[in-house]
Image 1 (tube, rainbow, N blue to C red):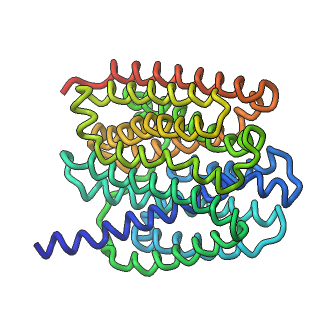
Image 2 (cartoon, rainbow, N blue to C red; image 1 turned 120 degrees about the vertical axis):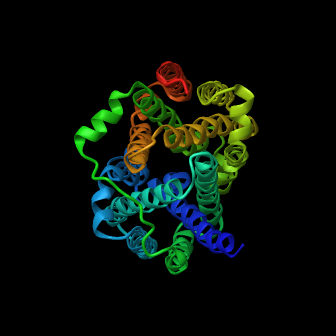
Length: 387
């Protein structure tokens, strides 16, 4: 009983830290048009607030094993959380576009240190039967953070200006720094150096290769929608304002429900591969509903869109841990890299279609990417070893 109680508190701290960290990552996304207006930026310059934050996320997880050989997981995650919080306070006080971008880029280096440590900590301290559920709860925490960060950022900007929410984030991250003191000093996680040969060996296995390409394509589409939707709404429904953009993210609630019921979803479809493909079909349907250029229709479309995305993401992230019997840290690191590299490219490449072919051309391109992701998961299924 006492052992259960002692492990519950650190887990709650891990989930709280995850939520606030993800809030920090996405807080600028719904208010990029505000930055565009205040600093007289082009669309591309405004989009860099998210792109620069995601790019380090795409490359850093593969290299954090080196740091974890020098510092304990607890020391690394606490230091990264503290620095992230202090930078949020500096961000809130900055008055130049260049300094804001520089801060976001440095913050992008801190976030993978936090997420990789926490995700791997959960993975290594859960037995194989429960690891998928434990990771699903972690994914639910990232979903809460993604929703709260975007929603409160838009709402706060509407009523108080954009700086206040970043001050709040800074304070909460400093609180998380002190709460993380409850983690074990050394979780005894055996992080291997991510040698190129080991990563190549992982990618040579068909089930991992197609899974990683699939999650790249899936998050490419999600990031594109989240990044360009605020700009589209400014044209389609200019009266919505920043609060209206924030309210649109209520569809994230479906992601929480999906992640916490991952086991039931897998049982319903029979296996992970078929459940993920069903998620992609729902994702495609949600994207289709965005063709209706009406705020109420888009509000409902977000629920369908997020249901599909998080069905695929929560199941695939758990599936990686289930399939990787050894070198889980490398498998997780590669997953996070492909995930956020998809988000990085998705945050600006679809802008070509948005600028040249309008909202409909943009959506058509996203649907083509989802068709490709469906193909990837189909290929993944054929390579999964039979138990």
